[in-house]
Length: 428
Image (cartoon, rainbow, N blue to C red; front, side, top):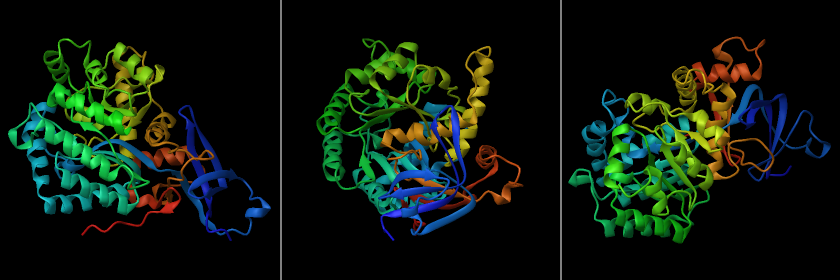
């Protein structure tokens, strides 16, 4: 037997494109050196002697990908969600993020966070940390130890927030560069990402410096874009010389000059969407959060029609859920309301589309991730849906749809990242 080869037998379902599921009933998926080699109805002779991991009757699907999550807000889930974005930040978010200057508090919360991400089947995730370097490094080290793929960014902000959460501009840039240098080559699975919180909280000097760092070290960028009408107006007030919100980021080399993801994009203009497509900027769709904070509904169909890469995100703690499966449900619901708002012009999303967004759509931000095509990393979930109802007369697509709507983490039997089974992380 070859230790570099793993073979899984089960019901394989994934989305090479957003338009349809690809299903293999009772088939074999061969994984070599952590990557998918192929899917077979019957094994070739040369593979017949390899050990088979038998997942018969179960579903084998790609792991979930979360493109936007505020790690230090994990303890705040479910609090203040009757407020709008800016009052919510001031009342709940900033006071909670201040606590991460205490490394012992950070360790307690972040260990719980790692366990939660493992539990809900998220195998790749993009994190905002806080402004605190020591806590950010801890977050990096915990996810690296857990073998869950992540981008982790030290947040930068030097204006328009309470003094206790603001940074000195030069110190912010210096600590960000130190974090990049320390961690950019440390892990195969966890990487740094440049993280201006959003335009209103960053001076032009800070934005310029962050853009220079991203280009100098070829580091990805993440931030927020057009989440809330008050926020969009505020950006216009702060930067009247710019064409729009996206133009501010672009001016400072933070909009596709390196790999970039922008969260929300609820009020993004046609010109901004075209710029996103041109610069290959990703959009992270956060439907739960946009509902909770009265932000609105992202016109996802318009982005897809313009060939912008879109993934799904929880946006904890604007979102109370940590499960991307539940975000898939919310994305379909939001698209139906948008369909009604646009006099049925923006066609509602269907199950294959939201599953694609929550796997390969967001996964492509990490490379060949989120699908079972040859050469893709084997990030996978093994799902036992037998307790959800009769499975005998259902298609694989129907079984997966039912899991997304009414299943939960208790249905996830095993989780794999790059072909390695991920053990349950210790909470304490």
